[in-house]
Length: 161
Image 1 (cartoon, helix red, strand yellow):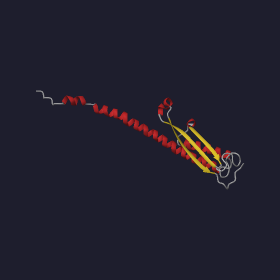
Image 2 (spheres, rainbow, N blue to C red):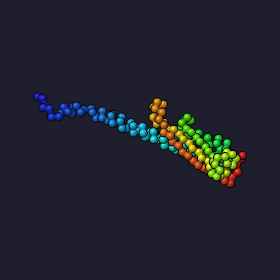
Image 3 (cartoon, one colour):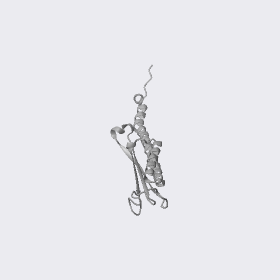
Image 4 (tube, rainbow, N blue to C red):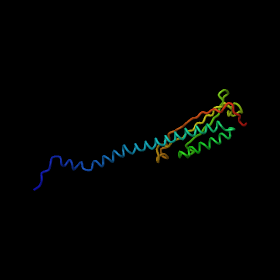
């Protein structure tokens, strides 16, 4: 004797296994992009911390240096070290700009270079963070992250000319 089929039993058989497909579709369309965004934002945060620390340290080293040449060398070395500590070693992705100005006279005060007692040292560091990860060489999308630091050279100190 065969049992009679319940109404809707065929519909249950048709639905069997669809939860796995729905999970896979939701996982691929929502979770994978979400993880990708989190990883990208972590890279941006890392670059923000690195550029901020590098600009601050480069400005400080430039302001306490005995002469402009020594200050620039120390500042560049500090920027290299700090960015390397944050695994930002691609030199093609970064730019460093160091300027020294006197507030009263503009560029070229004091010894003709702008690096003199009372001068303002401005360090701007920009790093372009790749957004597309492994597709970056194809897409070429970058997020520029930067930091600027202004430091004053002590007015009452002597500098070597």
